[in-house]
Length: 124
Image 1 (cartoon, one colour):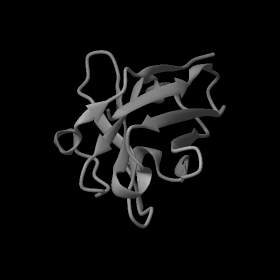
Image 2 (image 1 turned 90 degrees about the vertical axis):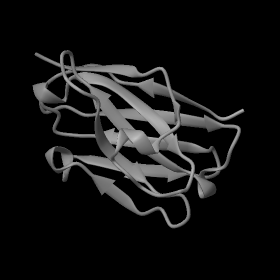
Image 3 (image 1 turned 90 degrees about the horizontal axis):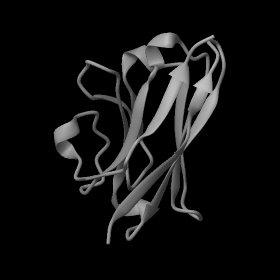
């Protein structure tokens, strides 16, 4: 059974950092891409970052480039999103999801299994 579970986040001050983890079970990361998405109140869910299955190719939405880093650990079957220099506009519920063809994509429609989400609030 394919499943992903997010952890991490919480309340962070502007300019601070935090790390989100996506624990995968029921599949191996080498065959799936993992994407991170976020949804702020009143806004549509947007793709933030992704990492491909086979070669670990990554991609980021422009608003987080240079601040967020996605990585994966095959030994623990976990994908991590390191978020630095956080801004209030990064406040959202963050979700990880699986893309079954291993292709890094920032489009919601390409993903099938989703986690329950974890809240990140950037505020002083």
